Image (cartoon, rainbow, N blue to C red; front, side):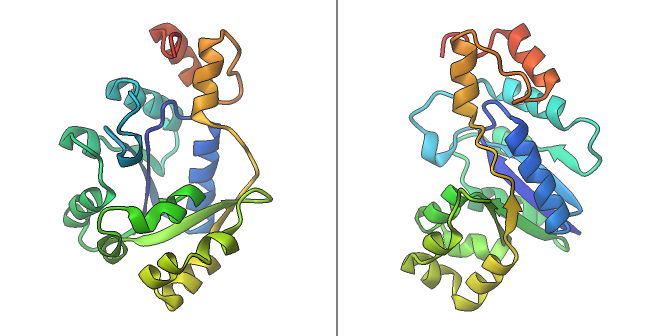
Length: 207
């Protein structure tokens, strides 16, 4: 079984996340996609996130009804800073015979050499890179010598060849938070159930 691991803060989850996950599932032949909300993302340690239980509930509302999508609270249950290498180590122990596929956006692949134990991550999971058509430049990103040395030319070539192409949808969670804080609509940028949950819980109003 090929299991995609889609991590992030999901604060809040939006349509772009869901489209990306579905494109990965279809184009990369993933049997399952696990949405993995972080408790404290390493690159966002200085930003206060919405409560984990709210982010998890919004994810569950967003992916409900999709048989191949699920939400994991592994990182939240573990607590502390959510390092990918720790998460993959736990998942490998739980899924010894499955192929773990780590979904990486363009920002993530560019920053990958600075992650904790990136070489170990590549031992634990197959990297799957997402690129938005007409927005992201994979050639520029992979020209970084640090990435070439870390991946090796053969694996990097395979990673580029199997990258997932996404439509150019420029939705950001920060834009949704700002819109709610300003009293503007977020309709059609996040599932209706998530929009209703945000309103009912009064989330992001003081952001």
